Each structure stands twice: as structure tokens, then as C-alpha cells.
Length: 228
Length: 371
Image 1 (tube, rainbow over the protein chains, first blue to last red):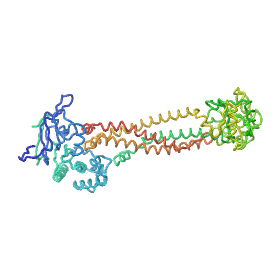
Image 2: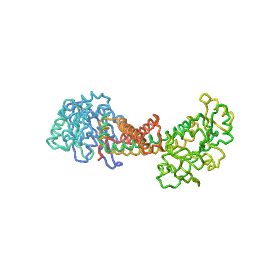
Image 3: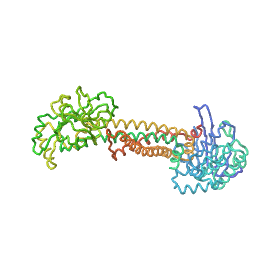
Image 4: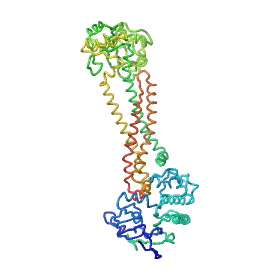
């Protein structure tokens, strides 16, 4: 169980216990014994200076990397080996990267379908789901457009739609507005929040931008691999 | 599928070059095997073309050119019940004399020793293009191909193995390698070979008597064997072992070249898409799906390249035959095309295995940082 800032007691979606991550043979401690519970449906903002361990924290929560020590559970599933990492990434997590990381040879709709492919969902059903999500991010008319011709804001909205494709309980966003101007960034954040509200997903957002932390249920500030 | 297809066809130049690598490998195999098969069947065709019922040669020889049938055996063969006629034949392969003409395809000339009075000469009579058949030991007839290439027209004097011959006629033949040769008196060839006999004997019988005559010859001549002319290749299967080994060697070389070409493309493709593959892994693509996608890409590339290669192989062989209509022959068999296509597929799969596993083993967190 975790305690929210407003005092409500909720189930923890993510549980970190003594999570440590070291690099370069132990010389760099990116994470130093982190204990953290992330509640369900929460909006969590992770801030801190460059090199403080924000992205590493996001990577271990996102089952992209295993901690050197400690344990992680996402939605009740222990992330402790390759198989569990793959399972958690496929079923529990949606990623929004700073660089949208869309596949340039695919259309907007096909990019949104990408996470649905390993689930064995039929093409028609995938297509329907992608159209529905593109509609939610305001890009229904771009479903068949190549992503190459889209603006940065549009691409990031497609990336958000892709992150939501599997209806994951947890969305991880690493500087999602980092490459956008402030107006477009605000629009992208509005889309992200709207979708989070609709789906009830938890959002963990890593950012340098204090303005987009407004309204966060939980603010985590990191410094030298520790929580402040 | 869409992802794989688009990856291939959005990078057209690279894909085209890889396909070309596979195509050339497959085309080479198809052309080589077809021409080799043509050479095999042309031996049977040649023997059948003589009109003989049986070809008699020395038993257990590794190659027909080492066979000898003595003069005495020829006389005895003539007396076997059911035998209507016996034609004598010997072969020699000689270096080309220096002439003012162009160079023929082969640097050697096939010398067919025959006798003017033998029935086998009917074959040359039918194919006579110009002049007449030879009658004496200092006359020869040459293939029209040689005549045109070496300027050996009717009436020309030619020096061969220290002897002077007059070209009295030219012939054409539907057998490719006969078009690389000349026909002269059998005694001249025997003398040149230092043999008191002939290479083979062509035995003529009535159709109904052939099997019985074959049996009689096999019984009466323990040193000799008699086979129907269309089965001579099967009799000398070992003779073609070298050819088969050469084909296998070329196939292996083609496979290696193809694999290296496609491997290079696939490695570049995987390297360029490192971040993309990292993203796929991040959004839940398991390793096996990444492996499958890259392997499928290789197989698709090889399949299309292979099909183009089959067409190229056929077209290339036909082009060769067009330029060398009298000296080359090709036999197209389904098995040849299946072999070529299989090699193409192997190229695709083998070349994609390493890049596929390399891509699948990329750590998503590192792949996403890749610049």
C-alpha cells in the first residue's frame, strides 16, 4: 500500500524495494537503494538535475533494465528475469519517448498497431483499435498518412496513441515534450492527461519542465540516485 | 508482414542490390546445370543420331575414349546372328593448328574417325551443308561452325598432325559438340592414336532383334558390352562425376557470395534500425518475433531474388545459345530450377540468421540510446 499526498490510501501499482543500479563496474551509482510505491491511477512527476538517475529509474520501472540489487513489482508481477521483463513490457506498460521513435516506413495507423502485433490480434481488430486511438488524439484523418510528413506534435500524439494501444495500467513518459515548443508541448500533455483520465492508467512522467508537473499526485525529486 | 514488406521496399536501392546478389547466384546455377545437363543428353542424342541399334565398347572403361574394339572383334561382330551391319568409330581430341581465322569456342578440335563405306556415314550425308563426303585418307569434312570460324571452306588445305588434308565438305549437326569437330578416315585416327582397332562399334539390327543381339554379344564377347545408344550416358555415369563436382563447387561458391551479399545488407539494415528494434522490444515485441521479422525479411528478399534469378538463368542460357548456337546445348529440367531456387532460399535464411539474433539480443535500453 502506498500513501498519497492527499492522504488517500490506494493499492500500489509499482513497488520498488531497495532498488540499486550501478554502472561501470560499480563506479557509478545511478540508483542507490530506492524504496518507492506508485499508486494506481496516479500522475507521478519525476524531476531532478541531469544525471540524477531519473531515466534509469524509468528504465527499471519499465522493465527495460534489471536493477543490480533490490526488487520491483509492476501490477503484482515481479520483474526479475528476461521473461518477466518481456511480459511486463507487453502487458503492463506503455512508453512515450522524448524522441517519438515511430517507424518511418509505416503509416500513423500501423505505428499505433505495433504493440498489438505480438498479442496475435487480427489485422481488422488492430486497425479498429488504432483508428479509435488516433481519433482520441485528434488524428483520425491521418491514419493512412506516412509519419514522415507529420509535425513533431502530431508524431508525439501518435506515440501516445501507440503507448495506449494495449490498454496498459502504466504509462511511462520520458521528457515527452522535450523536443517540442511550449504550445505544442502543452497540447501533447493535454492529450496525454485526457487519455490517462479515460483509461485510468498511472502516468509516470520524467521531466525538467516544472510547468508540466502541475497537478501531479506525487512528485518525486531525484538527486545522485536517491529520492529527495 | 507489412512491416517487413515496407522495410524492404522503402529502401529500394539496397534491396535491389541484395536481390541482384541472390539473382546472379541462382542464375549462375541454373545456367551451369542446364548446360551441363545439355552436355549429358547430347551424348545420348549423338549416339541415337547414328541410327545404330547398339553401341559396343570395352567393358568397365571409365571413359568411352579409353575403349577399344579390335579389328578381329569387328569381324566377329559382323557374324553375330541378327547383326545387319557394323560401323567403326574412333575419336581423337587435337590441338587446333594455327590458322588465319578467328578462334573457335574450344581451343581443341574433335576428330571423328569414320569409314566412307560404313552405314554411319548416312548421318553425315544427311547433314552435309556443302561439298561431298570424304572418300580417301587425305580428305576431311568439317563442321560448318569450324569452317566459318577457321576459314576452312571446301577446297581449303589443312595441316593436322603433320599431315595435309583437303576439306571436301562441310556439315551441320544438331549435336553441339559434333559442331566443334571434323570427320576423317578412321585409319588416320587409329594411326594417330597408335591403336590397332577402334573406340566403339555401332551395331545395326532390325528393331525386333535388338535385345537378342545384345544378349548374344554380351555372351560371346566377355571383354565387351553392348548398350542401346540412348542409354550410353547412364553407362558412363562416373564420367560425369567431375562435372557434377564442378557444379557442386560452383553452387557452394554462389551460395557463399549470395550469403555474404545479403548478410551485408541485413547487417546494415539491422544497424540502421537499432533504435527501431529497441522500440519494438520496449513496446512488448518478444525476441522470437524480432527474429521472425528479420528472418522473414531475408526469406522474402531471397524468394523474390531467387525467382528473378530463375528467369535470368533461363534468359542468360538462351542468350549464350543464341551466340553459340552450334557449340552449346542446354537441357532445362524442373529439378534444375528447384535446385536454383532452393539455393536462393538458403542464401536468404543463412544470411538473415546472424542479423536476426543480433537484433533480438539488443538490450532495448541500449538500443534506444543508439545514435
